[in-house]
Amino acid sequence: MNKHEKNPFEANHMKHHHGNNHEFPEPAKIKEILDVVSEKIPGLLKELSNLLYSPESARNYAQAAATFYKELRDAGMDNRQAFELTQQYMSTLNLGHIMKGFNHD
Image (cartoon, rainbow, N blue to C red; front, side, top):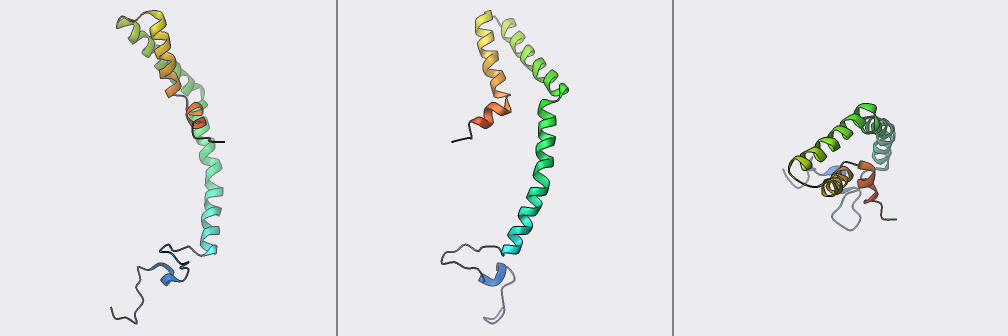
């Protein structure tokens, strides 16, 4: 490629270079991305909520906690130890609790 040819791998051919080595997309491209995100995110959140809070999910959560507790008891732990460890285990399965950790307000 000679110096007069444009490199096809350079996005926008450095059209939006702002004093650093980062290129910025065209405003129309940003709008297009945000439109897609705003269209898709609500549906994804609804699906995630249905997955996490459905009756089937609650049954699976309860079964997992009960199995965990039973295994601890079968391994010889007393009720108090097994209960405390089961509480900790259950908190690791609680997405709402986990997400609070990301909120730094």
